[in-house]
Length: 90
Image (tube, rainbow, N blue to C red; front, top):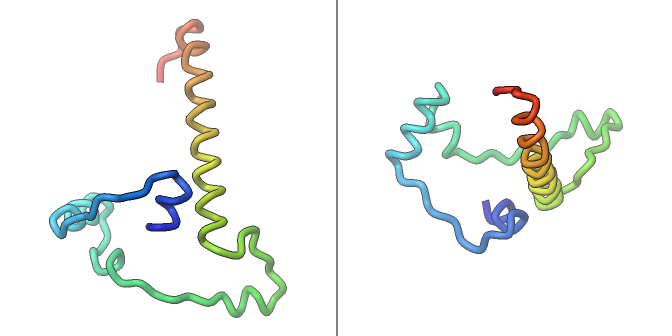
């Protein structure tokens, strides 16, 4: 979360309480244990087969994710007046 907050340009984040987590996982139809437990996963088979990741670290990937999300938001803002002029609802 620290890397994601940094990529998004936020210095602090609000902690989620247990009831928030339970509600969120209920709505996503999953178990809270899957959200709470962390696992270190090493993609040995992928790397052994020659797969190359576009981003070697989560920090790099989160920066790209935030950059793409901001670009998407800008695109939506640019398209909204055009859709309104054309009478397109959605």
